[in-house]
Amino acid sequence: MTFNCLQPREIKALQEIEENQNVVKLIDVFPYGTGFVLVFEYMLSDLSEVLRNSARPLTEAQIKSYMLMLLKGVVFCHENSIMHRDLKPANLLISSTGHLKIADFGLARVFSNEGNRQYSHQVATRWYRAPELLYGARQYDEGVDLWAVGCIFGELLNNSPLFPGESDISQLLCVLRVLGTPSQGQGMTELPDYNKIVFPEMPPIPLENIVPDASPEAVDLLKRFLVYHSKERISAAEALLHPYFFTEPLPAHHSELPIPARNARKTSGRGPLRRAFDIDVPLEKSLVNPALLVHNVVGMPNFQP
Image (cartoon, rainbow, N blue to C red):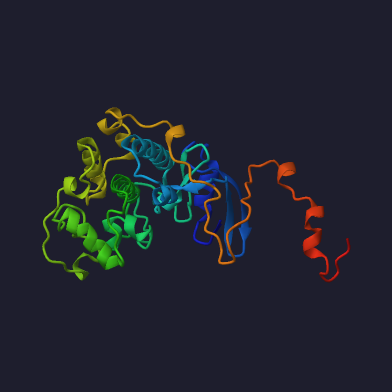
């Protein structure tokens, strides 16, 4: 991956952190043009593809397993002072053994809860963007990641995005329709763009109505993530201890999670694929005997049998 916006200190932080089973491994870095090329370990697929291609909705045990792996990865990032800023299903890669790993650190920043460092608010994919970012905050913390975790959790529970806005304004409206109009003390009214956008007063909708098939424990955990004030969102470390993960059904083993087929690709307009190639097949078993191709190339320019 080539990154033009990643700063040297963020790259250094990624290089220096210890290897973690729920964060994709950075293998190498080298300069390219005005940016850097970051080489990460190869992963088979991502969570968005799992959600798209699963024959049936994920079971509660499978959702718990994915959430555990996500939270463990977020804990690791935050303990190493790394704010990801673009958590979404497409950036949660899935290995061939079913393990989930956080990837794509192109918008990541090293953060400190001390000082007044400012950041861009134009980060995070819209559907997973925290409300403080939608209101133009330039000073924020790792709570933006926790909001995104809540959005991902809701998407797993509903098998569809919680806040599918088509623009920044409609995105904010999606949030307000569920959480209601923010009041004084919820951390929104002081933000730069709060008074630039006026919506009618809206009451909150109970999250039980938004994720009707979720268990009471799941709804409670979701509520802890989806709150306006960043400091009031449950931390990833605390979320790992939530009763949701300790009630039946217990989290599934990674071997019980769906693995997207590597060769499940659409064929081109030139007709169906006649042969599927698998990179896991030993080389000697995947080579084509040149003698079998002779009848297809005889008569071509420069052909020498």
